[in-house]
Image (tube, rainbow, N blue to C red; front, side):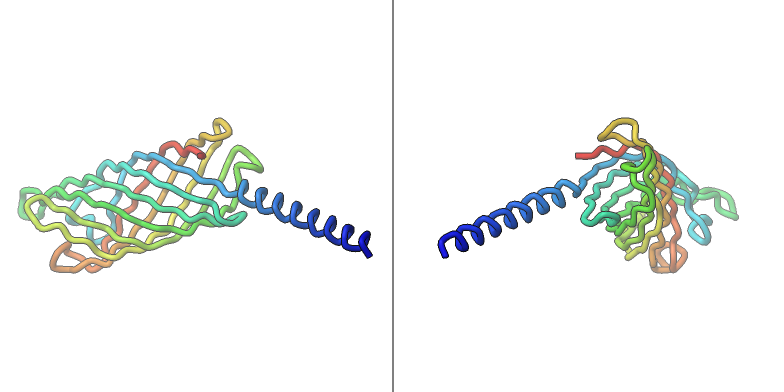
Length: 191
C-alpha cells in the first residue's frame, strides 16, 4: 500500500513538473514588441479637398497572446497643410492624431523566415486639430498590415501601411467620414 502511495505521489509530482514546464514554454512564446515609425499620411476622398498629404510619425506596442494572434496599439501624428481653395488662398493646417487598438493575425512568422507579415483590424479615435479652430475627436476604424524583415534576433525593419476611417461631423470637417492613410516605415524591437 505504501509503495502505491509513493508511486502515485511520484506520478503526480512528474505531472506537475510537466505542467510547469509547459506553462513556462507557453509564457516564453509570448512576445512583446515596440516600434517607432515615420512616413506619410495620405487623405483620400472628401477630406483630401481640405488638406494635403503630410509627414507622419508614430509609435506602437504589441503583445503576442496566442501562436498567431497579436494585440497591438498604435499612436500616429500626421501634419497636413491646408489644401488650396477654389476661390484662392489656402485652408488651415491640420494635425491628425490617430489612437488605435488592433487585433493582428500573423500570416508569416519571422521564426520561419526573416520576413513576418501581420494583418490587422481595429478601432479607436482620430483627433483633428485645425489651426484657428477647435480640436475635435471622432470614433474610427482601422485595417492594415505590419510587414517586417528581421535584421537581428530582436530587431526588424518595418513597413506599416494602415487605413484609418474616422466617422466625423460634416459641419466640423467637411465630410461625415474622413479617410486618412498612414504609410510608414520604421523599426520594431522585441523585448
